[in-house]
Length: 189
Image 1 (cartoon, rainbow, N blue to C red):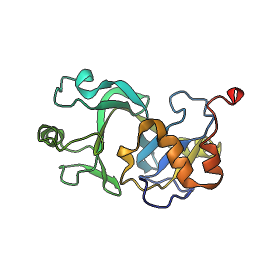
Image 2 (tube, rainbow, N blue to C red):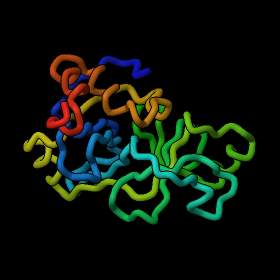
Image 3 (cartoon, rainbow, N blue to C red):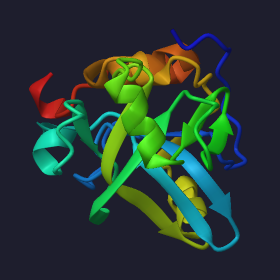
């Protein structure tokens, strides 16, 4: 599914995946995989890919056209709707990496939904986002809170949420493959 070799690039870049270390104490990011959409000297912005909510986009908004699972993108501005997609023909969409885009013309997304082109495998909707101030993410990486992955993003939206964290770590191999098997609570091993 993740069709490109993974490696641990210590340089944080847009398009990287941040994988939380196995025992992260912050419940917002426990066992999470965050796609970084923007990283620059003023800060970092991304979405948690594997935190589905019990709501659909239609239930959370007045958009009956979008009966897709709504994900929690992060704890910042949880009332703001964002979306990632695989459509290179959406106006004003910002490329992330490997055919994955953030945002763009929402009416064009709705049009793809009405034509039956939109699916959960090519578009994901988020409430809120994950954000870090300047140098904050680098400090968290130095404290071993995050593992950086340059996984291919081609199929990232089609990997099941409940297995994404372990899948990325397993594909990284070595000690990361071992991490993927750590129990959530080591006392219950």
